[in-house]
Image (cartoon, rainbow, N blue to C red; front, side, top):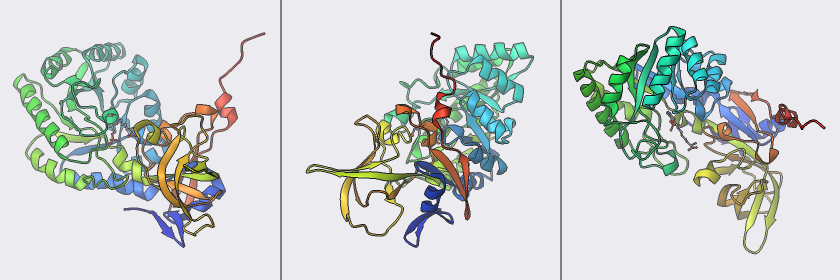
Length: 417
Ligand code: LLP
């Protein structure tokens, strides 16, 4: 489902023209479609409805509390990696009992808060982390629910920076060591072994690596059963890819069809941590052309959005579709442009070699920017972070005000005379 579509030659989000959003809230800004977020979450919920399954949206993909709230209202769980993400989920009305806490460097203060509110499970990534969690739980007189994140050594066949399931990656526990470390977890008095967890990478466009992973984890479940450790849930992480250009990623329904066949008859709940496949195509980043700068070699469109607003093109050489908001022809005609921001770095671009018919003042939408867009934004070059807007039908709501210089400077101070 794509609710970013042209109507009267103007790109809309659901029933709202993006030009109206720009007028009301300025640029650059992120615009999300509520209906698309909901649809993408429901794609998972419906696909796995036949088996006990917990869908935990990966908060890091897009963490505005309005988004989390929309998903919480549908019954979503959440995958978090920090205290900040936990507090966002709580503020958004998410149920702590549906929260998975991932991440490989959890601090005591984070563990304490998560235990206090009663999360579903900690995904533990090392033996040392087990001891820390056991100590914190003991101090609080509680039992901490744990899974071990195992590294199944499966090649996710994705970009090296977002591939996490190979044995050379920093994540997880080597599957060959897992039984030994599960036995330690099982014996620690303040831990309650619940599940097995893994996450092999992001933007996967094939199902085979997930299926291979599942098979390896089922093998581990059998080994654990043999030593008397009963596993209640199997968390397969996130990672399903989306279409940025011409990829044809599998849908949650395709994934479910193959997996539900495999899990049939097993007494184990499934869990997933999808981020990108829920958020990416449900958002765009809106930016305005400041100047055109053309010379003998190149045409540049200098835009008001930059690498600090959306770092994926600079960081991963990610290709993101960039389209004009208005389809009206301009007096400039079509040219091939590099779309560059005002930041003082050669790597500050959102797209290269794009054929566009645009003029100064035009609006452009960077598509598929809902995941890892705003959440990776920074204040580099002391730029204010963009506004975030959610469209629901015919109404656009401001869900995060554009930052101001005052926000940026709050907390800084000069030395005394
Ligand atoms: N669970 C864990 C433990 C993760 O580390 C991640 C993503 C997810 C779930 C969600 O994965 P997804 O369904 O979104 O693929 N910034 C990069 C992506 C980094 C992904 C990090 N971990 C990008 O913009 O492509």
